[in-house]
Length: 346
View 1 (cartoon, rainbow, N blue to C red):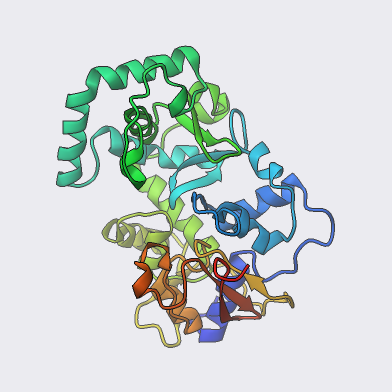
View 2: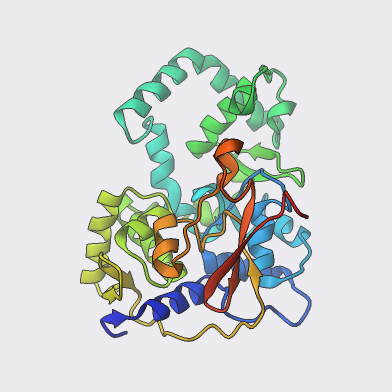
């Protein structure tokens, strides 16, 4: 890899590294196709919003075309090949990567990574210690369970997050700490059980990497999935703090695992893997992208790569929306050429 890339070459790398450059399979899409597509992006974001279909299904459709969604369900759950955790938001990642997230579980056990979060989580634990212990004991005894199946779910009334039961809050607290594992039922409800009944024993037996080792591995995974990216781009992919990411990227460059390149028009240095090769994407068909597609997660990068300013307006009050509630960009060749609001016109 030479030390400079044109803006077009950077786009080609980004599209190809996301599995969006090659033609969709001509044969019937198998479970292995689905697994490989997720391995390519590294982390598949999950989201409950269902306008056309939930984002996890749309991201795979963009890469594979029509497929049986049961293939995705079959890859998750006890003994599955995919592990749900906080990768890029709530995400599915290859099960083999579970040890790389143990530092994040430890961080949650230590009440978070900021003083304010530590204070809030510590206060929550102190106020609900007995209830959290009772929920964990019930999962051990009766799991797998959804929050609604707890013997004492302690339901609440409210809007959006405020309507979550106290049982679900406790389960999510335990999930963040790695004390329970989870997967999704077909209706998207999370099911919880103890890790020993969900994660293969061979994975649980793997040694726990240091924080630095895990972050280096995740940033290297980011680089492979992004093709070419700045430190901030790499950090955002798995939600690693930019300050920490900068140190780890420097270490990866020193070891030869990453190389620094200059992209025409980018003000910051970019990084890629030394074995990457620039190729024009051969896909001839146009591709609709989920608003939560990993190609366009980082908005500043989307602007740099494509000259395309994009914002998810799901969370924008209706009078302030410019393009619509659920707008899907259209990728054609190496350009984002249009926007479709499929909630307005299905």
